[in-house]
Image: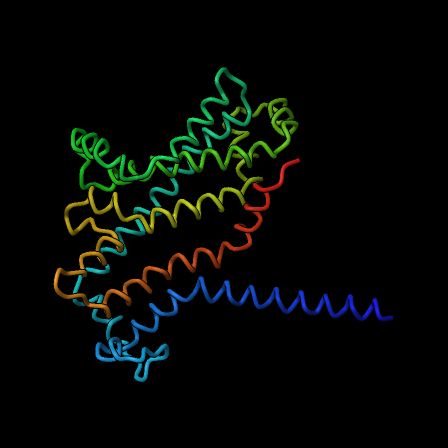
Length: 283
C-alpha cells in the first residue's frame, strides 16, 4: 500500500514539474511577441515610463492605422507575399525532381552529391552576397522579383531537396514498379503517386520555404534598391533613423508581419506534425 502511494506521489510530482517546465518554456518563447504587442498598443509617453507596464493603461490603435498611411506598407506586404509564394512553389518544383532522382536512381558519386548539397547549407548568407550581386547585375536581374527569387533558391533548394529525399525514400519501390507495369512514365509516378502520398512532407518543407522567404532580410535589402521592391523586413528597417526611432510604427509593423506566419502554421499544423514525424522515423 505504501509503495502504491509513493508511486502515485512521484507521478503527481513529475506531472507538476512537467507542466511547470512547459509553462516556463512557453513564456520564454512568447515573451518577445507579447512585449511587441504591448508596446504597439501604448502611446509614446507610456512606452518610456518606468516602471514598465505590460498591459497598456490606454489602448492606442493609431499605430496600426498610421503604418498604412505614412509609409507604403501595403506595397511591402504585396512584395513579401509575391516573393514568399513565388520562391516556395519554384523551390518545391525543383526540389521534388531532384529528390525523386536521389531517392529512386543509383548513380556514381550519389553520396558525394548529397553531402555537397548539405555542405552548401553551412555557408553563411553574407558570403554569397558579392558573387550573387555580380551575377544578377550582369544578367540585368538586379532589383527584379526573378533576381531576388534566384538568391532565395540558393538556400531553399538544398534544404528542400535533402528533406524531400528522406520522405521519398520512405515510400516503397513496389508502387513505382506497379505503376511502370501499368504504363506510367517516371514523371507520372512522381506527380500522381509520390507527391500525393508525401503531402505532409511537402507541406512541412513548403512551410519552411514560405516562412524563410517571408522573413528574409539581407538579400532583400541588398538586391532590391528601389523602394517599390522592398519587402516588409526592409520597409520596417527603413523606419529606424539615425537620431529617432518610431517604436509605435515599428512594433505595429512587426505584429502585422507575424500574422501570415501564424495563420500558415495554425492551418497547416496537422500536416506539419505528420511531416516531421514521417521524416524522423525510418524503417
